[in-house]
Amino acid sequence: MSDENVVFVGSKPVMNYVLAVVTQLNKKDTENVVVKARGRAISRAVDVAEIVRNKFVQDVKVHKITTSTETITRDDNSSANVSAIEITLAK
Image (cartoon, rainbow, N blue to C red):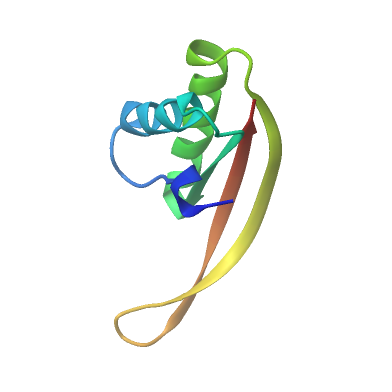
């Protein structure tokens, strides 16, 4: 899967990410799109997947959900564990 089929969810409004996912799904040769988020953006990523599935593209299914913990390095060189999620939406 190419990087262009991945939507990274951050702090922008939910509908910005919904539009990005729908745009990716409407491309001719796209079978699936991965919605990724870390930390506080996880709930926003779940909202994006559900809005796309229920309101915009009814024939899309949640193919796979993967959760993980990533270790990030802070500015002061200390490390922190951050939860992450990947939601794969497939036609």
